[in-house]
Image 1 (cartoon, rainbow, N blue to C red):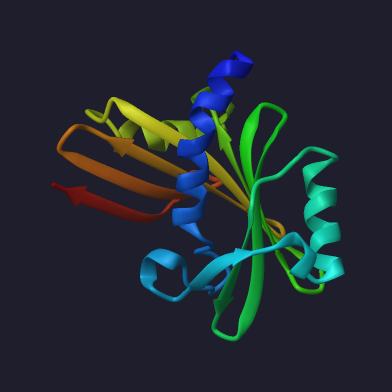
Image 2: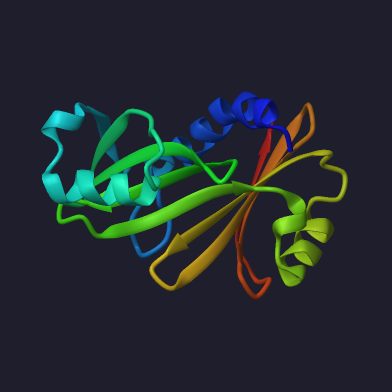
Length: 169
């Protein structure tokens, strides 16, 4: 993939990452209305949270930082391009990494996940793939679309469909 292609796709991936929130670990995501989010200046970040984001960025620049309050917990998130992939990281105020979500290509899916994706998204030509790591759990999120309908799948590393959402319209 060319570097130009990565930067063209980055705004779309950043929007997908922001819309996803974190739906694992019992934390509601922004789509469910469980998140009150807003931008925060880097100077206003707690030092451990900023250090964790900088560490995850690996010396690369990252986009604006978003602050979300979810069920009494504060989560800071930032997007970046790491190893040619759009990546979003979420950390808490103490600097603990809550999740890392990365845009990937179809060929990077594990075989068990790829088989499920192929079966579940037959007839959906446009597809995008994300991998989200939360602690020791890895989850694959697949968005598939036609001009009139969309489908979102969340699949475990072992190829089990954990959630399926169909949108028509």
